[in-house]
Length: 210
Image 1 (cartoon, rainbow, N blue to C red):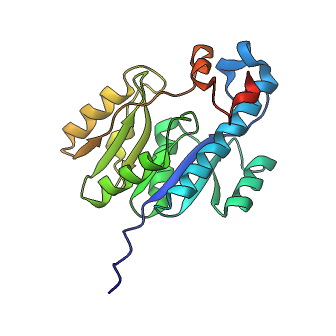
Image 2 (cartoon, rainbow, N blue to C red):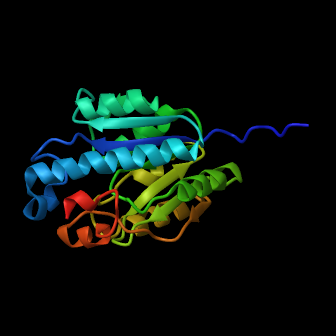
């Protein structure tokens, strides 16, 4: 007797196009504009491959400022994933739009966390399948690297000071106010500032940047 397949949980990846001067601008003093863009491209591919390998459900890459960049098209073709343009609005509005478009439980992630593994994604998906209304993996800097929802939860994305150290705390407060069950996992590190690059040293995948 075969077991029923687990409930699909989509993954939405928000990514900036790897354009020099536009991508990973805080890393330009260390890597230069071209180097920062190349790192952005590598991080996006790394994240997309982890999302596909997790096999929790359909994967969509949400690009900005548009989806015409060759690296976006190449990834979508090679990995057979969806490709959509991020809508206008702040980060919260764009994450909410990507989550709503999934039409099913969804994990929304960026591309700044090379520490995010297949296991992290499958564990988060399972939390939603098990009944949590939302789940999150905090970032060590006070934000988060993943937010998941069983159904769209606009309250989690409204009135947040995006990019600051209080994002995760504000998200917890909004979840509590809305009486949502929020499953949290241990925090991970991400790549945002030049000092964060030290975490990548010793990684074969990112060795060319050092």
